[in-house]
Amino acid sequence: MSRTQPRVSELLPLREPTFLILLSLAPGKKHGYAILKDVKEISRRKVRLSTGTLYEALARLLDQGLIERVFDGEADVDDPQKGQNHPGRPRKAYRLTKNGRRVLEAETKRMRSLIAIAQRRLGEKGA
Amino acid sequence: MNPLFFSRLLDFTVQKMKTVFLDLLIHFYGALLCLYPQRFRAEFEDEMRAVFSQSLEQAAKQGILSLADTILRECFDAPLTLLRVHRFNWRAKEKATSDSIAGFSPVPGFSLPPPSPDGRESWMQAGLEISLFLSTGAILILVSYLPLTWPGAGWQRNLGIIGAAIALLPVPGLLAGLVSGLPRWAYPFGGILLGYSVLVAIRFGLLPFLAAFLLASVLLAVVAAVVNSRVRPLPPLLRRMGQSVGSDPSRLSFCVYGVMPLMVIMAYDDAHCNNRTPYFAISVLLMVAGALAYVRSRQTVVQTTALLGGMSLSLWCALLDQAAFMGGLGPWVSSPGPWLAGIGWMLRLWASMTALIAAPFLIGLARRALAPGRGA
Image 1 (tube, chains in turn cyan, blue):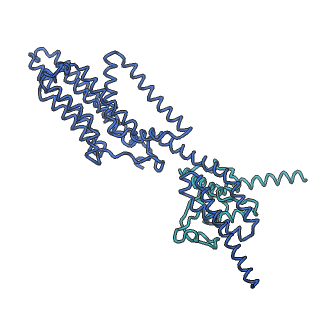
Image 2: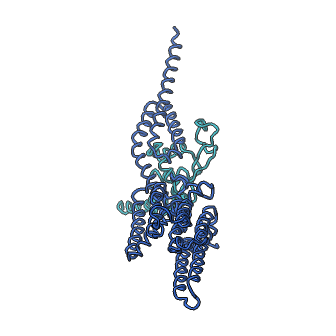
Image 3: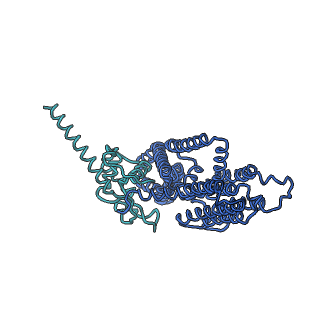
């Protein structure tokens, strides 16, 4: 897949699954199954990604340069069955790039300002 | 019978059936993955299968409802995900194609086979690449130096017949080259046909029409390639042709050099038949030697020098022949009129060929000098 570096503003607003995947990777690198579980947990079980949806999003994020792939057996921190599927093969994990972190921060800021507006208007209406 | 045994047997059977069922589902999912684009599969197939397997095992531990939920979610999401992945893959391909057309650069990993080997790698290939010069050179020398006692003697003095034969015989070669994606050996065939068309157009006063036709054809091809690449990737054959030119612009010089057999005939007029001096044979040999030096050279500057050298020496031989012939005819010092006209014509021919052969090399130099980031 071709690697491109679009500007942050071109990528906003993010779709909810994309935002949640980036958010899941904010603390550090994770492998695919750990991302699935984390997204479910972050969204309080509202968003449950299928494997296909997850990897379609990961492919797109890799292409946009928002995440990168690392080969690291220690990535499976949340997986009790670490390395069972392909013993001896380094497992692939994903982590945010600098640009990915910038996009995540920009999206959070955008959502925060929206929430502020919403709160202000709801407050005005309630007053 | 011990009820505990039955209980254990039942547990074992259920466990076994569950394992078999999960294995079947994983195999089914593996088959479903075949519907994804090949490049996507190469990158993610193993991971997707592993993650699906882990999700299933985790869901199975939580009960039948959780398992059903996982399976149904995968099934319902699959068509939409497939569509999105194919669209993504298609756009990536389209972008790669338009980039390759814009820069005429080969696209790594874009299903193009590597460029065909050329004469730098093998003598066999070198022989193929200079086959046009070898065959036309052989024809010219045979026609010139064998006694005129063949049936229908005299036809070989007819420049029109010889020129047409030399120019039209390469048509099958050019067609074969186009079908093969324009390898290096095909360029001289294109050059000699183009040169013959130009000569015929000059002869019949059609040069402006030919120039307009060629210019319009090239513009139309470029516009069609750019517009088409936005809709769908170009056919591999056209991409191979773009790759062929883009990978080595000196091939355009080699294409121009393909006109050399016609140039040699023109330079000698019909002297090769009625004034058999060794100059003509030397010119032909120099033409072949220039082509051979080109196909065996590795650096662009050496390649261009080889072509310029072959062409210049070949035409200068013709110049010497003409000077010797004119000198033998009369006192050219006291009446240099026709002699000077002949020399002037030869020099103009030489200058035109020099400019055309050197142009791709000079354009390449200028592009490199103007490229951003140079010297940084």
